[in-house]
Image (tube, rainbow, N blue to C red; front, side):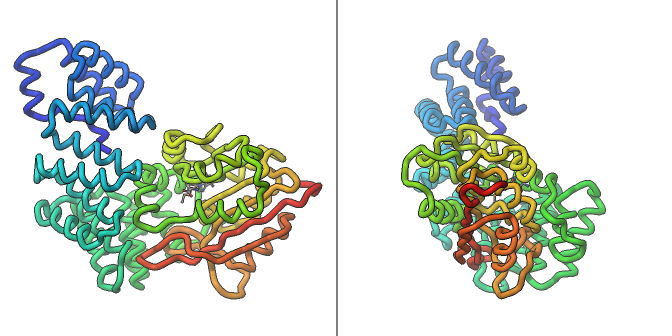
Length: 459
Ligand SMILES: C[S@@+](CC[C@H](N)C(=O)[O-])C[C@H]1O[C@@H](n2cnc3c(N)ncnc32)[C@H](O)[C@@H]1O
């Protein structure tokens, strides 16, 4: 989403030539919007529209703001109204495309990006977005063509290199694709040293290519430059060059997911075939009473709220908890929760004994190595007879162990999970293997786990 509303040069010159009262208010609104002061910006855009009923910039940017606040239908109406007045405004087409994309209307998004490019063939954001939406529509050849066209037109477009690196990594068929993706991440970093996500991706790609020392060197140099940064600290452990912590540190989780919140749904759902919420909730629904709106449910590590629409009808009360404020903002905009809290999970569970009939956790306990503290706390937060359901990445084989992997997430063996659930007091344990996402173009084997706190059992 274009979060930096800016008047085009043409419109700015026109505004200067003939100052009108609304121009000053519009400039103040844009300033507040850029500073993320959405209340002030919304009020001021409203004032502009009171002065000039169909002022296209105010309609356009108020549309962007409405989407940021979760009012996406209204946002679409506003930007369409702006485009009726200024039909050849590439930014407005691009932003309308972003709203459709984020709402899952991929065909409409594609059409908007193409219109933006008709208005301005050099609109690199629209071309990059087109590539992303084509990838999400599984038109991989077209997506690759759009990614490469962008880099032919703008060889120094740092984000373009980063996005092509992600594309090659997500759909790697051969080792060469992973090598090319590493090169793209390197180039993205050369062009924009602030893109720390590219640095992390480079480290992971090098590790996957078996270049473990180079991978560790990337993280080590990064940590030397930024000794307080939790990401290289965690990633150094993830490639075996430092001791693994019992779970991912709070500051690491916050940093990664605050930075990931805007693109999480797009990356996971569209590009990585993510299906943990639907598979987990499908498994839980087989255990739960059929009566609608009868259960108190905790979505533990709720992220952007993908589980909410799948469990809402069963829930009398649906609570979401997550460490990342950015992810919780997205969940709030999606809606469906009775309450949402930004908090560390184990600690939060310990402070809410005997309150839930269901504690569900999709793709969150992969950030925990030792599961005993969090599962003990989940047992205590459940009422007798209540169900816990969660997903994990799997270590196959007979061992009893957990490990931090080069992706920065943990994996657990079947025996480990079974033992820890038993020690926490759970009964009726079911652990099923499934594939819930892809990584490096390949399915990741996962566990889908359900277990019950026995009826009448003390916490
Ligand atoms: C991969 S996302 C999954 C989100 C959501 N459950 C879904 O399926 O879309 C993992 C989430 O776990 C959260 N998380 C990781 N460790 C946590 C902790 N210790 N306490 C609370 N949330 C945590 C992250 O902030 C992130 O939003």
